[in-house]
Length: 173
Image (cartoon, rainbow, N blue to C red; front, side, top):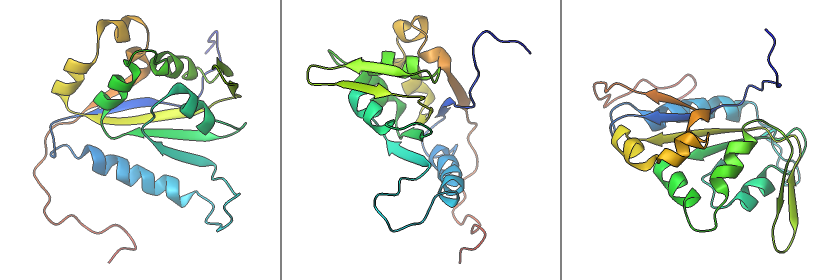
């Protein structure tokens, strides 16, 4: 299939459902186990893992600092998508436009008052959780029309019966 731009396997996803029942956090936790299994367990603090997981983000500059290196993969985890949107809507914030642009995995340059921050060959994914009602309340028309909301895959979970005693994962006691 021909496509005008390169396609990368990064993703932005929002897991949405009622509180407690669809197991949004549990889903991410199991995925995190897979990521952790691929990491270097070196005790050397200078060894950076091939996949860096960051929790939330307050600014575009902080995000670009996390993406500081060719071949780096960053997964941003937003335990509450509404919080990420609120940070992006603060006066002077360029977090939402930055995330919108970074989805294409193209080099990104940000000029601040003190310095220029570059993300070279950035590769980032986002996993966020929220409730359906908070998602409806938080997404603004400008998020949709500006392209930010359209970069996300929204996974809406159906409530399940509680699992008071979930089965242990392989290797757990």
